[in-house]
Image 1 (cartoon, rainbow, N blue to C red):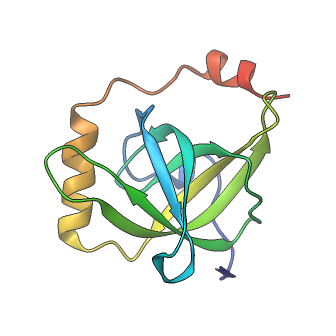
Image 2: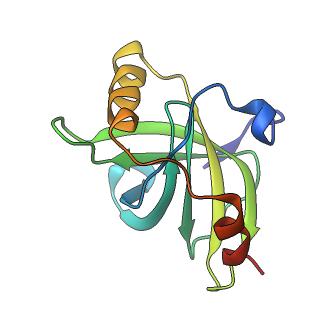
Length: 129
């Protein structure tokens, strides 16, 4: 979609607690025309991590759609903060959500409060080449 300035990386960049999220994250094409399924790994009110065969560049802006319990799909803008090739052949992408409205941030925090703890680092390391 597009790129904007530098992104912060690593745990020091996280302001929100991550939680394990094995749900579907939809990547929405321009004008909402296409939706491609991505496999979620974690979620927070500040961003998410997912796997997909699609190719994105660090800094690129994408549109995501999340199905959270008890509410309509949440459509959000996100920026690719980092990427890493997985052993499966897919690529894992860390996304920072952009310009969240307060009700969106609240919905994400509520959803995360019912999710399990994040995937342990040792398990994460085993997913990547």
